[in-house]
Length: 376
Image (tube, rainbow, N blue to C red):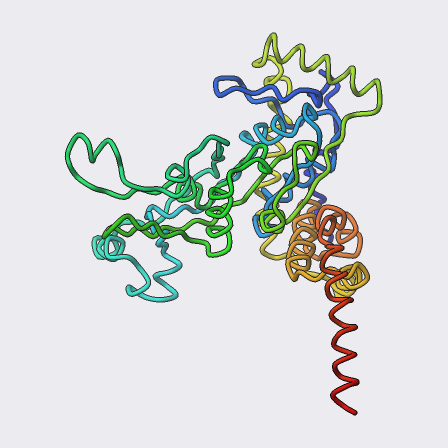
């Protein structure tokens, strides 16, 4: 019996007949404002698809949004707040869970959680994914953690506390203008992303915490390039150009004006569709556990990567995980060639390096010359 088709991809593309859709012309968001409805965004299907795939499957490796200022990148990310799914969350700073207990016994837990188990207390709880902003002016101490200054000054006690990277564990870390980050902060993020944890040393004090997060970044390429090491940490790369259709641009203007005047009214107009989309995302996350790759899809994906001469194995991880997420979003359990094609641009663009190609070509010539001389 065939499975009922999911509405997620349909919801992503439809536009409400009640109102025109969002500003793709300006990023209108403040901490106190009602978020701009994600489904009200005009056009920008590639950006919206990339963000939803990352919500469905964190294993795609995050999302980088690339485009000029005022194309709605920040607006779209902020609009995810009403769509964030629920996950099982550890109650421990070190990330202890019942699954760790089952797999490794009491030795797999920290002393505090081992004590909790003895008292029959839970190690996890059901919680919504949250979004953490990393401001450009954040100090390294804010990002990685350090000594609690208030406690040190008021009570003369030294205690290490997690930074933003620790609090973002299991959540989403959003960095606007990611290409303008200080190098020390960038290095810290790279370290945490690579290891899945971070260790802070301050004299004799040491704190190690889990730090696995979905990284979302946005940037304007006219303001500078992104370091290749950090670029490699983004699984999906979505281009966010300005709208070219005058009708869509006027539609964006109308919604920008309405949002400025009555943000609650705009949110209410999209409330029903937003709730439906949030439910579909949660269902897709559950369905993802059963999604497999068809042999034809596997061969097609590997062939694409080989023909493009992409060196990094992260290409396969991102391509296949994104295809699985796309399949789950469509209400199916077997990823086909069409799913690979649907995510190929997002997963494979910007992964080739002319410098690397030139290096290995030159190295191959040298190796051949050495082999000829040595075999004489």
